[in-house]
Image (cartoon, rainbow, N blue to C red; front, side):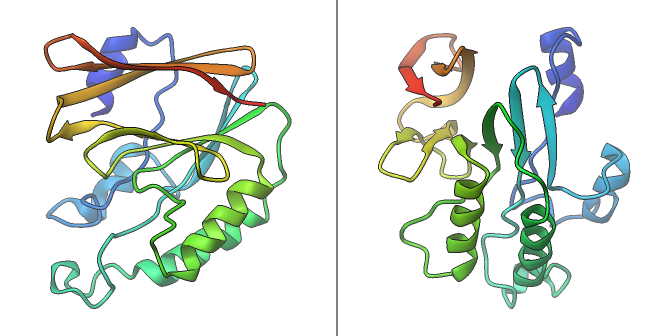
Length: 191
């Protein structure tokens, strides 16, 4: 995933990795941190005036689900992640959140999601960029705009998004695997 992204931008842009719900599973799950050179899957990064809070929502299945094999405990992991991030200072600039599973989930009953939303509010996050749902949508009824950015979708094919930020506004251009623009969101206010 990282090498093709690096070739795509020619090494001129940072590449940020947000772990998804499939990475904790499988033969090489235990080696992923070492392969990527990570201490944790949640971290911050800065690029110009943009501050990125990269979060890991963990597994999307209950901890006792047989697919987890008892090897990944999401609730305890999320508690540790939230405690670590809550202790970080809030940076100046435009604050964005990257994650695989959308962190504001009004239908979720878990207090973890309430805590994630409160944390993003404290951080002044203006845009959350996520995936997981296999659709392309911009949720604006959330406390901050949430771009659910494509991937393999049922109706649009495989979708990728180009997000351009100028000043305090973002423009999103979504293209399918044929290179056709399938949707544009403009402007998304970031102030």
